[in-house]
Length: 193
Image (cartoon, rainbow, N blue to C red; front, side, top):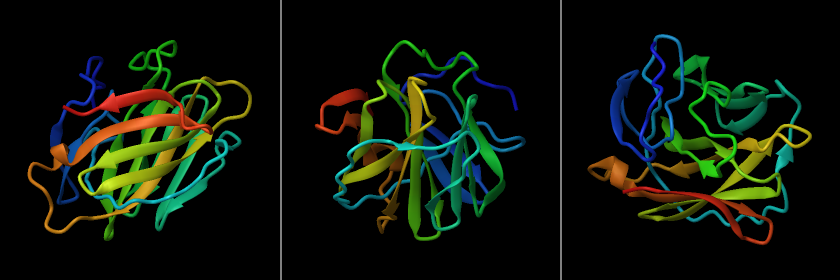
């Protein structure tokens, strides 16, 4: 798969991955050998979670992010597996697609059973504590994970029920993604068109 060097923030890309229609809102696509780039599907219900700080993980330490989903970080970026993509997917933070000096956040999501697995990479101060995804159905709160020290970036994840019927176009279901500190001050925001 050829890496895309330019990708407009919040661009919507339709792809069919393992027969499931998906859309993408991301700063750059996720990479998986031989698979479509980023994929996102939708769904949300309010999830109230008070986060005090990011979860600090060792490089390669796997986090059970959702039923059947594992996520881990390396110095190169975010990795994750799902039941439909057991070989894993990867989102690089060192390939030049992310400006490490500008606050940013992205959204990738996919259907996992009757849930949506939402995740992304962010660039923000190490005080990042949670992520909020605003959808047509409410706000979903995500968990922030990062490597030890002061990497200046991290990842986040959340789950949300799949809405029925699915909105069309599904890309308009998402409104924004915001990285917040423990005092709920925004550190980086992605607003969908």
